[in-house]
Image (cartoon, rainbow, N blue to C red):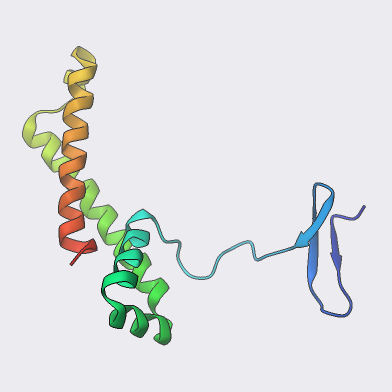
Length: 124
């Protein structure tokens, strides 16, 4: 069986996956990928900020808006985790000495950093 076939009537390209032909999609999705922060913001504006959601959706800027927010949120989260870990002395030395204490401290720091990102960027 051929790996790819094209339907003459519709012009659709099909790809052999296992025993079935499925419509071959684009390799690259349109726009930038949206991570977890962007998905959470999307859910929030869809439920609570309907006018903003409708405006972004109808203007075609929703994907770019979410991708940009996702990048900002991820950068903010990483920066906060790094700063808090340095401030509280959670280092590789602690990790080598007492792994459980290090894990507890890092989980605490990550949770606090996530709350700041949620309050400042996601749920405002």
